[in-house]
Structures are given as structure tokens and as C-alpha cells.
Image (cartoon, rainbow, N blue to C red):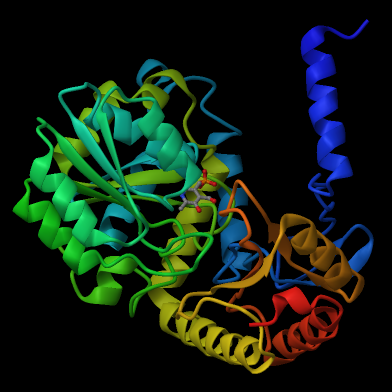
Length: 397
Ligand SMILES: Cc1ncc(COP(=O)(O)O)c(C=O)c1O
């Protein structure tokens, strides 16, 4: 006999199916790449965060295999209980060197990094957290874990943020933002955010998950993009996107902040560390970025410009910008899901997103460009988009 809870859940699932909002994950049957195999058919992949095409890079794979032989599969416990492996120390040193900050502390994901950082730095109701309304779900959940006062400012409205900072009475103040917003593909105004954080004695925290390895001349992210590299900011980011695409996240900043997290952050204290394969694979990805980055970034930028121009020329509704996240806004969730299906039939894999991931009425296809795509790949995607958009006039600007 199903329990009451199971009946409630089954009812909700049925409703998702009936309203065409039920998500089915395609099965990816080959390594992650600009072209891959899904559900038995070859596709061009327009829906991965593999921005530099390093997920299946020979140096990254070789490094992962080396780590497996050297350190085995994992730590079999929490770092402070069973010891920190050399591969974690090496990875954290490399991240700090790459970012240009004093220290870094790794977590099993950037989700965990945000959840491990935000409530730890601002735990009590004497503290205050100021957060952009379109920040990533992991930031939203991290804030929910804290008892601090919450101030959510409308996306990018920094005058409103300033008003909130002016009036809030708090001990520790955190201003939290995505560097690149994951659904819009736009970039936070970091110079102004830094200025406000300085003016009101707040700590700026930037989630660089979609900016690391993507923005800035050498891929160091949003601060490099704006020419404001330097001390003062705490950043979180992922190893699961441009930097190899496996999993893992980190907090990078001052020695004091990182040391405090090692002492107090609950995911550090109660959860296993990264697998050694991921440590070495991610280190190899950072090495590739530091040595061959200019070629990869040039290719990525040329691809992004070509694709964005193509989307505009098709008359599709998009959000202008320079990042590899190129949304095509189509309106309602069932339209996004139906377009995703139609594109898949044309050999293009791109995910449709609807409410509550994005605001109601702004469902979208989120196209993501990689340095690994060729111009021919992107032209094929644009041709498929043109064909499918003709069946769905809602996607027109
Ligand atoms: C802005 C942002 N922060 C955090 C995360 C979570 O990263 P991870 O997959 O490493 O947990 C994501 C992933 O989608 C993201 O886009």
C-alpha cells in the first residue's frame, strides 16, 4: 500500500507529466564533448558547461589515471579525521596561484562551497546577507541555512543594494553575487559591487562558476574581465565546468577566511574530500589553461560571437552579451520542452528551462558554446534552430 506521502508525490509527478513539464534526462553514451552520443544518436552538444573542451582532454585524463594509481579512489573519511592527501594540498595551492590569492579550500562541489561558506561567515541574526535576486540556487539555499537578516535586491539593481546597505544594522555583512548569471549569461557589475562593499564595510562574495576559465584575458574570471583583480573579494567556483568538468568546488581568498572554513564549515567537517582523480584532473585542466589558454579562449570567443550573431540574424529573442551562455527566450515551459525535443530530432542537444528555474513566462533554451565547437557545428545548430523556430513563432523577438 502506498503511503499518503507517496500518493501525494505520485499526484504531483502525474501533474508534471500532464502539463508537459516533466523532465527526462537523456542518456549520454560517450565522453562529454562538443559532439557526443545521446540516447543512441550522435548530437551536437549545445548544453554543457565544458567551455574549454577539457572534460575529455588527453592530459586531464592521463592525470586522473595517475592519481588513481598514486592515491587510490578516495579518502574514506573527512579530511580533519583521516588526514589531508597530498593531492588536495597541491590542488589548493594551484587554485590559489591561478586565481592570484593567498589560499583556497576545496569542497566536493561548488554547491557545497556556497553552503559551506555563506552561513559560516554570516551565521547569526546580528549578521546580514545581501543577495542578487537571480543568484544561483546554491546561494539561495546557503542563505536559508543562516539566521542572518536577508536583503534580496532586484537583479543588477545596485542603487537598491546601496539603499539596503545604508540602512541595515549588522555585524558581518556579506554581499553575494554570481559573476556570470547562469540563466541570463550576463555579467555582474563587479567594479561597482566592490566599491559598495568597501564603502559599507561588507565582504563581497562572488560565485565564479560560469566565469572561471571563461572571462578575462587569461580566464581568471570576472575580476580580470573588469581589470579589478586584487585582494578583498572571496570567490567560490566550480571544477565541474571549464576546469575539467568532473566535480568539485572551492573557496578562494585570504588565508584567514580559508583557515576559518577548515575549522568551522560544516561540509568540511562532516563530508569526504574530493576524489584524487578529480584533484589531479583539475590540476591538469588548470595547467592547460595556464599554458594553452590564450588559444582556447580566442577560439571560445570567436565561437560565441559567431553563434550570438547567428541567433540575432534569425530574429530570435535573446539577451545580448559576450558570455558563452546564450538564452533563446520562448515563453512558456511546455514550449521550451517541445522545442528541446524538436531540436534533438534535428541532432542538436540543448536544454529547455522553465519556472521555477527562470521567472514565469520566460522559459528558454539555454545554448552554451564551447571552444571545442567548430564553425560547422555552430552553423548546423543555427540551421536546426531556424527550422524549429518556424514551428514555434513564440521564439521570435
Ligand atoms: C553559479 C553556480 N554556482 C554553483 C553551481 C554549482 O556547481 P557544482 O556543480 O560544482 O555544485 C552552479 C552549477 O550549475 C552554478 O551555475
